[in-house]
Image (cartoon, rainbow, N blue to C red):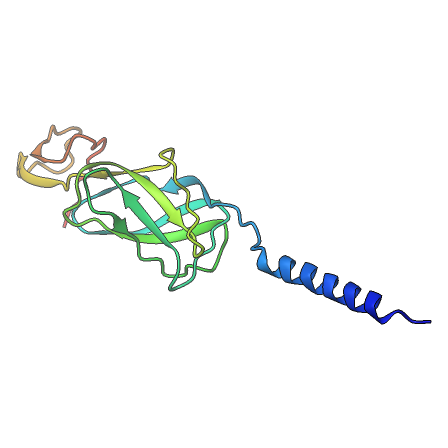
Length: 166
């Protein structure tokens, strides 16, 4: 003899388990950043080709973003030409024109809102370089050594100077 009440209970119980299983969202790991290259740029325009490497990146063209954050400043949001192409590498362009000089936190925000909130990965914005004078203005060709003095602003991090003949 078949007990119909028992079968209805079993189907009802399985349906509730299935409903509960569908209602639980999958756990998605937060994005992590392991490096950024280059890690600095000048506030004289847009820096292109900044590569962020890490794990668990999940961005689309309309959801998710990469931002530079600094206390007391407006966030700088990157343009990401191919946001969904990799879960471990992002190539960004940051509009830095006029941005405040200093160290900024780099944050990746996935399409689900999870983010890499850490100050371990930073990007440094430097003042734009301007040259006000170069002396001497001329030198004799084939001279073994010529001392050149350069004056301007934003030159504190310059380690090499190359002169080109135009």
